[in-house]
Length: 295
Ligand code: HBI
Ligand code: FE
Image 1 (cartoon, rainbow, N blue to C red):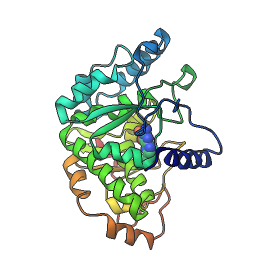
Image 2: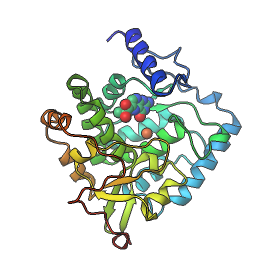
Image 3: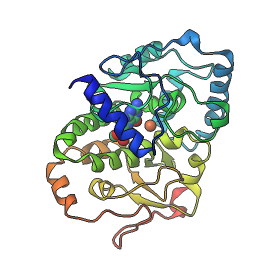
Image 4: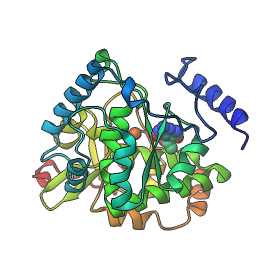
């Protein structure tokens, strides 16, 4: 697709969704795939210090709350000391699962995003939030993208799931299925929970890069925790500016991968005839996993 046409549509959509606010990254130097250089030497000592604080807070929170696969990936990436050089991190990742990191100015159009994922390339935003945004940020930054998403890409099964998601995204663009697929992304890749022998754990990047939701999602009595069913998730609306009202729980990554094996074409057709579900819905046949079970 022509890059400029694509770009105009993208910025028009973003502006509409965000009530006119422009995206924050610098897109002027991006290539046709929205890739930019990470100018690692341009990060200031203050920015590296802010990264270390963000990293240390999450590093203190993840034991007993993140799944083991995430913790293992995080240890291999070894990024506690400052904003990582993403080309070096990409080499570590590539050796593990064949994924690479590409560096982008921020959110990229869906077609671009899915194309990267389908080719086992994960887009990581190059800029870091400001100090005032320590606890909450609207658009994904390098901390969210790297700390939240990259560790699990070192796990072979999760890595295959994300590639499959990208391939499904490319198909969904043609089938008018994007809203369904965006909900699947939200409730798995961003806010997914996993039931492990040691108890309930988080694997979603939105949770694992958050100082507050990481505890809330596991132990608050407020949200529902529901066994994941792909079609159910695809019908479920989500909140972008509060903690989630429902989390969906998988038993393991293989099951997540297997559930996304079938072609989504007939699923989209079925879902178009059904109403969407509010974020706090609990269906009559659903189990809200008891807190007692979670150890
Ligand atoms: N771009 N850089 C970036 N990161 C994302 O997570 C992202 C994106 N573009 C589109 C997009 N996500 C969404 O449409 C997904 O929810 C499918
Ligand atoms: Fe994310």
